[in-house]
Image (cartoon, rainbow, N blue to C red; front, side):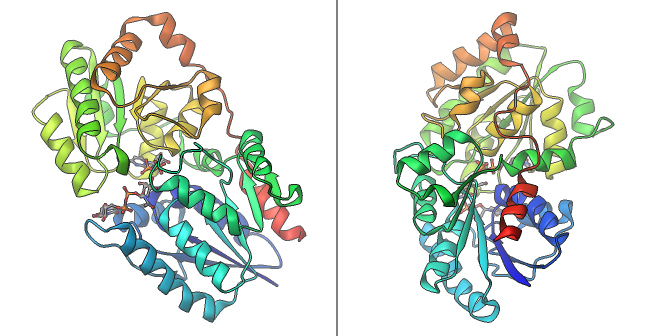
Length: 364
Ligand code: UD1
Ligand code: UDP
């Protein structure tokens, strides 16, 4: 019996790891143990509930306005105890969060092999995104298995000197998650409100955008929305109080902008599938939107998802107010520019990444 432990703690990790938990639970000869760090609380629990995943361990580390020190120290000491008790054969972590980094570090200290899901994404600038580029490189340093979502991500790893036999191209498990969630029949009161208008979906949360960059991009969104009566904006605001303060200050009082609580993932995916356009600084949404044919203006200075930019669905616009304003306006006015971006392409896989990862682990 092989003991596989999955460790994750934030909303996006949970969305991309829960389908893998489900896949591994169905495999013979494998015992699956789920440890959540609780880096996010409500946003994590909502995903666990949507996928019916019940954790075996919960480090429950979240604090209001937590620092990177809080997260890293909390996960590292919590993992010491869990690893001591379970001694798993392999621990799977995901992506680039501080939960993933600290869990991988704990495994390194305990000589336990790590499998890195969504490996090999790089901006090649350790400060951007902050601290995620550092986290993903650090996990890559200790990982025994690198599950790269695309060939380009695998190339990044090989270029850093990782052994070819440890690098696998699997697709991104985000696309597996979409297979669970997007439904033809779907209704929600917010969508009823937006019916007959062009629905713009907004999300923003990146640490490096907190403060003036986020204020500037939200001001641009407000200006454009006020100019176009056929546009309605839904912004499920991240639970970070620093984000909530900025969103309220810049966007409240505009009747065609709804600031709402974070949506449960099945709701968010169905909103995405029915939107006209997305403006975001999120990583995961850059992977989901191309497969649904939704243009995305990425409000960041760089992206580790160049495949979506090349496919034409993503455009990197930065956080400068005037640039966001111009690009947003153009996609509302210029039908040809919009159509050129609104093509469903799928650079991130066919929705069977979890099956591939489980096959690899089972074959070892
Ligand atoms: C974290 C990850 C980031 C990822 C993002 C996804 C790190 C350093 N950052 O950033 O890579 O893109 O998650 O959303 O790993 N909060 C709640 N309830 C929740 C979730 C958050 O109240 O369910 C509040 C808390 O006050 C918390 C704050 O949000 O202190 C920030 O959460 P944190 O995980 O530190 O940062 P994120 O910006 O969410
Ligand atoms: N998402 C969600 N509810 C929301 C907003 C986003 O379920 O209200 C999902 C979205 O579909 C994507 C993930 O959350 O899968 C992205 O999370 P986030 O933007 O917080 O983190 P990132 O991907 O930037 O790390």
